[in-house]
Length: 229
Image (cartoon, rainbow, N blue to C red; front, side):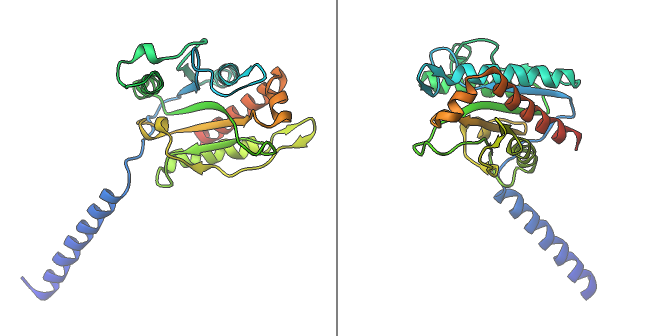
């Protein structure tokens, strides 16, 4: 073998080894199916009310916003599946997990993974010790999960433009977070914290149908923009 061929050989081997090392170091990320099917996951439900303040239950807010998102997306030609359609916990659909909460989460993960959808969006409402914090925050699993990150940015951008009573809420950046449902699903997805129930003004807003519709429209608009791109 000539010196030039030896150099080419060792260069090729080096590139292959470096590529393999990079692939090992990058966490497994979801890949989107080429469909117009979307899963919307209303967080909590049934015996799990989520955050509850002054008779306002997160589980009800999550379901209502999710159903509004579903309606909006279906009007724009998407096939939308909800992980729950009523006030129920999903733990009874899964035997894997040592707690009701873990079984519920695993049931959601299974539904998402078996859906053959392009993406999923999990809908929640947040709480925080600082009651002045407001606005919506969208989470994705990892900086290296590019599709989920792009989806999160698109929805976050849409939600940041939302006004309530003519006033803007706090703007936030989408963030990487190791949530169970994001880590264990096999398609791109995000978790949306639609607002803070610990903020008195935002809690009052989320209790109104008008504001929940605005939130739903903003989420659906962000999803639609992502799917177009």
